[in-house]
Amino acid sequence: MDGTTAIRVGLRHRRTSLTDSTKLKDSASRRRTFAAALQQFEEQMNAAKVVSAATRPINLYYGLVQAGLAITAAHAPGTWTFSKHGLKLVDMEPDIPDVSVRPDGQGAFQAVSDATGSERTSGAISLGSLWNSIPELTEAPLKGAISDPAVDLLADRRTSIQDDLRRWSATPSPPTEYLRASVYVNEEMPALPDRKAWLAAFLPKYPGLHDAQLWGSEQDAFGEIRSRRFSVEFCWPAPKREMTEAEIEGFFDNRAPACRFATDRYLRPAFEPAKTPPTPLMSWWLLLYSFSMLARYQPRKWSEALDIDRSPHAAALEYALDIALEAIPHLVLEGLDQEPLLLAKPMTF
Image 1 (spheres, rainbow, N blue to C red):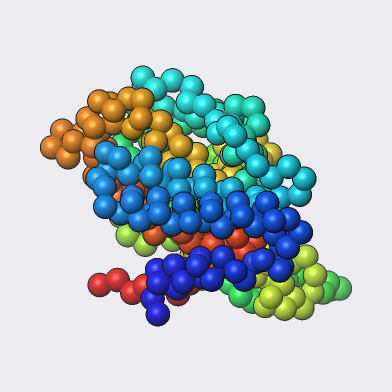
Image 2: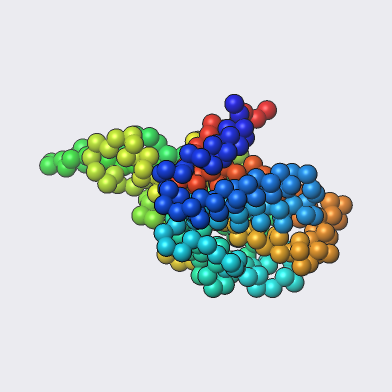
């Protein structure tokens, strides 16, 4: 069974399997809403597959809202229904990467964020910034999106001991264990004299790199992979000695969670100081809400953006809407289960 089929079957199975293990067991109203909302989610996703990119954002977003209602019915304490989006586009006139979306009161976005443990946002976020924060979309950059992208992180599953001057000391101290990870950046590698300044600018952008330090010198920690791609080796003092593999995984889960696939960890940029970004599910929610509003209320602007012969955004937008067909059901299933569901990544040729 491939991943797409497994997720589809999993979503249908949750129509009954969650009844006795969630708040659905205590309320007939919740159970009826849960069933109807998931049915509408499924039908909206099926409809999204057969329409063009001109209409697809509307089906995707409203299907996602119904999935969100199912999630709150199953998991939200107290009030679990909503009647507003909880979002607003600041201005629809700028070029698409510069259109911004912001929270607006209390609505679906806030309720589902709370039910899934996603950090709430308080300020406006540009669509270019949202796009770059979604790991799958970094492979198809949106022209004009100049914000910092999600970057790959490969974590070492063991602790390491740094070879330092401790061994030359008359009274050597116990070795310090470190957790190590490689971060992969898609830009030109800074020259040696510029690396300190580059790090000073890079580190604050990614909450997951809090307290990180280089593994080795500025010369040794950087390595060029190819043109416009290099790695940086980082480390953190281990929180305790003799950490298990599960504890190390948990450490990195808090900093660079795997996204959909077991081998894919990402550092995602912050939108606001001292806040982690919304989860991938809620980042997609913000993006699809915005696209659906443009498609509904600015159809000419949206159609022009999709003109493959004239628009620099067209191919990337088509790609994003295709990826959403795969990503949204997966992320919804995780939201229903309240835990990650990590698949083996399909082979590519």
